[in-house]
Image (cartoon, rainbow, N blue to C red; front, side, top):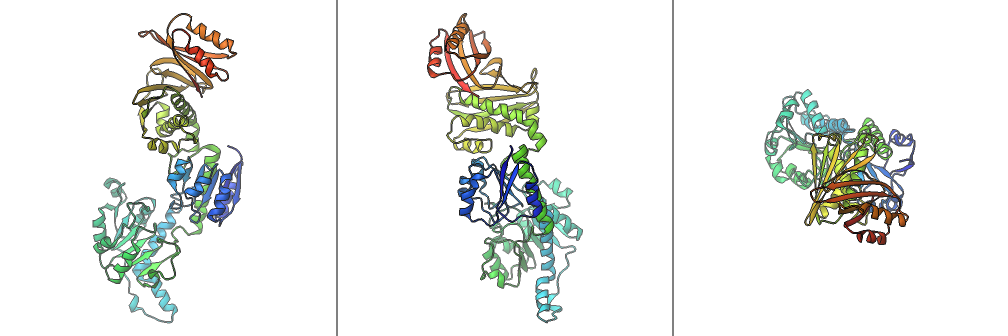
Length: 530
């Protein structure tokens, strides 16, 4: 897609801006500091937007984004993006999950050192003209136990650095196996055991309904009285009031917080008066190297998606590198046509759409192909446009179950897409492939074998296999000035029936379809447009 427009609505490094501006076909507007109303007023003109944490892409903004195809977040956190709303509109949401991983991990380690040696308090005391050496007697990290909540990119880097400090590392993560943790030198434990054993606890998990207030009053009571807590992940994982009360009661020794429920902190926030809590202003990703890295990464990701269809670090669709996107595109194209075809056949009160990919389409990825089938099908039933991102949400809302199946190559045809639509009143079965010339072919429809081109207007006519039927239909179409460019016929000899696909040029009026239905031995007529 040429001449796409991208809005950068937050402050971004020059390198990140240039990563977009240097791409041919990309027009960039740099407008940091927009209010929500200002953003709503202009967002409809853009195909892509690059944000950091200051811009909030809520449902109101997304509703106004008529042309938007991608939201790029320079950084890992996407709390400021309404992902379901974006997905329902078919907008890809991308982030840069590894660009600031090292920087955030290093900040967590820095906070652990600060707590262990009371560095901020010691600096403040010395600047005040005091020399309180005995007051700031700290602790060594060597041989202490570090508990890591969340063993993703950042958590694993923290573990690696802590092991270099000769710390004992334990961790919890519901998505990591004990075997993998052991390979990383981490002892995988349960939540309660981590709380009870750790001398230092650092949090590196996203904010979700399950992790909101994960560290609450009950959790804090399970920690050692000599333990320290670090949160450089997301505000809201730690219950701030419970932490304040635990420190006042001496239930833990101290805490360091880089993230908060409300940012910036109010001037009267109790943390600011508590010497046992060190607060930093969300500095986890704030290094020159990290900011430039995530800005450049998101610039390339957004441009690659808009210009080439490449999908990297997307949060609401499978990853598709540029070379894979190019290879899978023909299968996505025929998948959407298959869905559109089924959507124009006799309604069956659909309950399940099953997509089976064999050979190369299965190896490349069933999900994008299945979503394309679903989008093609739903697009024939809904007023609003549907694409492969929004289609699963629309299907779920309508009780239509999407089933994805991958199978080894079939005999005769290696690379197939088979689709079955099941419903309360019947079913439809369609099989398609991409031939050696790149043409999209229909080779099976409701049990009939054929080899038809899937494009343009197609008349699908079921009739008794009797002499004269094809001639009568051809005569009628010729009299109407409707040219038949191709004709494919599939036979069911046991039933004495034929299913014929007429590729025709132009539209077929309703009264012409009614005339065809009146021809002797014609059972049904459907006109589909692909």
